[in-house]
Image (cartoon, rainbow, N blue to C red; front, side, top):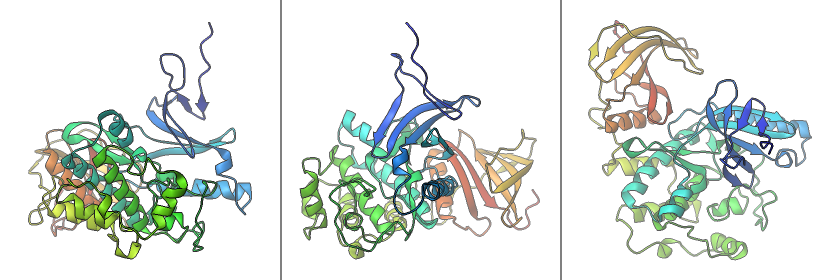
Length: 404
């Protein structure tokens, strides 16, 4: 019996299940996501394959529409945050668009709920802080996701090192993009609607102009979903769901009675149907959760722990994809390695820090929060970082007077 023909897209080959079928990770309105690997590099990746008819429509020519979509994907690929699955590549092949993104081994939050049911608030809280940090970063860079839901959030790693990662940022749009409209017309089909009716904000369903508050409403529904272990609106058909979403009634009375005292005001603030009354920014969510003693919160007085330096030779410098030239080795610290570098944007000297596995998880998490906010602690300032799972590369400004 002949082996099933392998499915390929450009340099990517879709991996197969034991029965020879393609290894499918997920299926959505826009296409399919496969587990694949780059045939030359051997890197395992999640490969999102999108139907051509979703690229080429509207008033633009096919070439212009495709160019616009690819341009958005390229822009999103430059988002570097531990809570966002990194986009490695995108291309057109045989009439379909695909992009390759970081593979996460823990499945989606929707998968987790379907297998294990509701998540306790401490676990949801950890995920909430990670997602809010990712949204804060994306919004600060001008991007809306427009489809935040449990199926678009992956889990990578386990234990304290587990990281929630938002996927499908390849379908994000810049704020106030031309594709948004101010015409308040309810969509009763998904021909042009981008998102999921169960998690979409009222203004998204009404096709009003969107800002970051729309993503926050979807984020609120996602947290509600995790806490009860299922879609809060799973019993509603599309028509009644839309009528309920754009109607005047509040969702506050529909939330579970036994919600954690910290969770209730947060969800009520995120689920306000009137965007003007809703929590305004993801940064505010991060502040609420960190101010109440979250595990990821750095000390406001001390900031992330500063490693004690022990000078000795190091192996070669890390490979950062863009933005920085990493040069000579500097030192090894108690829990990190340091390298000298230079920012390509302004030619200013920087220090690249790579924590090792011995760094306390809470200290690492604090550094991530500090990096997401680009906090300046006087002696040094966080500029950037790249992350995949528990592996981090932090970039800080070279302190004045530093001889390294």
